[in-house]
Amino acid sequence: MAITKIIEVIAGSEKSFDDAVNNALIEASKSVKNITSIYVKEMKANVEGNKIVSYGVNAKISFTVD
Image (tube, rainbow, N blue to C red; front, side, top):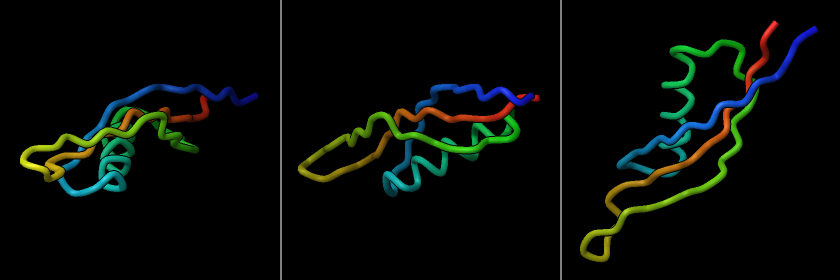
């Protein structure tokens, strides 16, 4: 019987929210196997001089454990 576990991660990017989510997946997959989904819980952008300089996400990553 497989069990699904969830971890919460924070990731960022200087390009976009999509890139931040992809960075979360890339980093989590270095130590977690069998990832099945990512739920983006929060999104945040840092602004300097009326311009977005970085993007961040707080995401929940689900994976199965045998």
